[in-house]
Image (cartoon, rainbow, N blue to C red; front, side):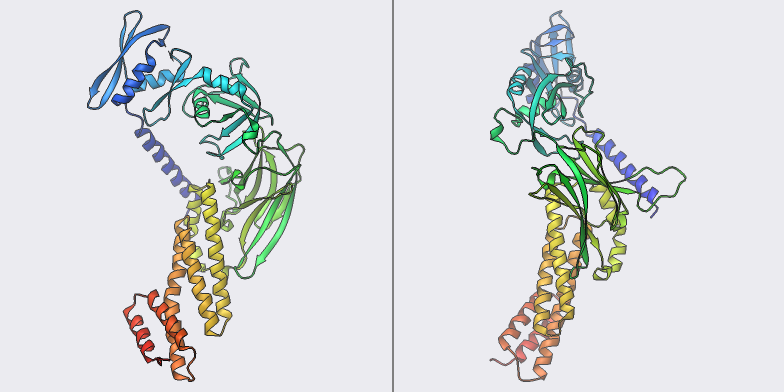
Length: 495
């Protein structure tokens, strides 16, 4: 498939998704409960330097309401949700008692009242800021505890940091001990209070990050082959100035394509795999690694969008990038990033790999960010899958029926377990295909073995043969196979 057409198709999907999202915007009219809540909040507030004397709600459609507002100059105004939402973002509406009106979502009319005084009291007493990373951040949803250096106002520092993802202006500044600066809108501040993100007692949480980690060195770890699974692992070890107090899930990765000059050929290794290292800096340049298996130009750079982050980057051909990297935080001063390489393609079904190429590429585009749960599931899938493949390999080398049977039966169980942890259609299809093949092969093997046992006395363990026949019967719905197994079972001696 033409790569440009593929990426153009992805872009069209994203445009369609954006259109669909806009189509699902919040309704113009509020339900009765929300309208009453708004009327109460806006009463005695200020609109464009005029006091709001009174507020009422008025029905406009079944179940839909607007607000009717009377100002101190006698003007009567009708406000719908779109107008109120817009005014809440540019502070045209000011609530009494130093509060602010917030819309918590772009696709609903859920509102909240933010108490500025309460926030500043908590913020000025807090020693720790539990930062919840924004949806636009690669660390989206993760919470990391940072020591607070100072709390300030954007206007006092004469800064213009802009607005948050929902259009609310950044109003507060929290400077952290590690040198990081956080801008908070009223919406961010409300969310921080709601989830107890401002902590007065540092002893109540652990770890609290105070200083940034200084990256000292990148060390390659050569490929270690696993003869049984047909794969190998190699790693990049990041050495810091002290032990790292972060979980592996705090090191997300993404895969992206570098821009290509129009009219020039597209290199095979034009993709970059990038790992984000939070709370880290490069005190001095760190030597990179030219080549390590399928990675080229491995280097550490400062994140241009975040003051206290380092990015570990490498060029890669996506066709050989079959598994996400795995992160291990050592008790020493190191974080190890490991990659899996297929070193023996004959272990895998070549046709299945070829047929799955497009699906793999689509997965990379659609699943660039993995949650900790997805990473755990993929690791478990990989463990069961590789164990099952290793058992198949050993079974091929065994001549005795007993060992082959036990290995193939165990492989069947492992492929079934791998299917339970599949996080993509490809993984699910591959695992179930292996399980299904064994569901066919194992009854055939039992028929062959029992038939030989009946023809060549003395008869081996009769009870054991009965058990494997019953197991084989439960694996198949093929009535002819089931009938053959039952007939063989009847031919076995009673003892």
